[in-house]
Length: 434
Picture 1 (tube, rainbow, N blue to C red):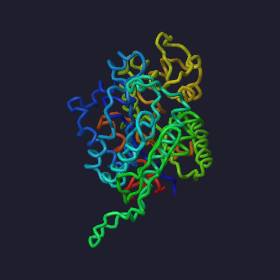
Picture 2 (cartoon, rainbow, N blue to C red):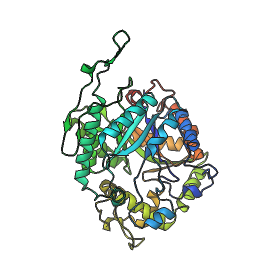
Picture 3 (cartoon, helix red, strand yellow):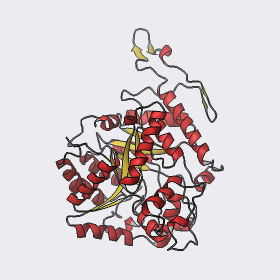
Picture 4 (cartoon, rainbow, N blue to C red):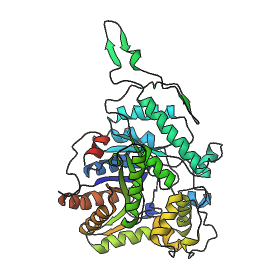
């Protein structure tokens, strides 16, 4: 029996995610307002038709650092609306797919977040997930009127933030509600406890004022790339969105994640890792390659530079377009791990032009071809990487989403690589299914 793949889709609640310029192509529904729920409701219904584990919404709290004008002009992951607010609208039109929203640990108190996601777990009937991020851009800090904490300090704070949320979610015993009409008692106070947390970054008395969900706490997702980020993933996450450029790099990344899970007293199988991929599929190979070319051609050079800076934390203003990637150095912003991964896996001789343009339409391996060719490559990556599945990087095109669900997924199902139907009702059950 072949090992099955967990599948998901990642996007942003805005006009672009990784497909910078994708809105210019004929596949994109400019007659629909992305700021309203219908576009996203259509997308998650497509994903649920494909029996995906999850729809995953990334987020940012500000624009790319510089040049801000180019970020806004070319919609380089800007504007971005609050994905947490979108989840109930998506839950209302689906019944099985997991729904993940990003929320930062850097600029808010964990009590509010614990309350928010506990409520969402009820409203989604166990399908809510929280993507934990630590917000690494100066522009985000400036929006809150504070200095950006150092990389290590953000992760230290983030770990404590998650600890407080988990303690608050556990502050009620499952049978605390008695609803005794005779006595008039609604809750047994002995089964609802303060957490009395006093840590380096946070204090919270508790208990949470939201009852526990019969579905358990929300699923925790993460996407750390640096060694410190990967340690937090191993410590906290149920599912990890991984970005590497080939199976040779994926396997050690996955092994390090599993090692960190064990170091934190968990089973290595407690954490699933799904690799980000950008799929271009067509009825013929030429059709698929034309889809890729169309998207690559839609990226203006200033937009590619801005997206590269946003993703890696490297200011490439004034850097030659043909400069080797190996000559660039990371700063305090962005993902330290992404520049290292790009340099290692694409090769130090790859140029800024090649890396920036490619990453602007999907900061992950591009898988291009017919349904059979795409399935072949996904199987190859799956087996060689030792990962648990894939997250398809997408924007708000129902045509793009449906091309994968209607062409690639049936081929994976035929090979026994993807589920034919959901066996459980909750996101956590999907992750534990295989």
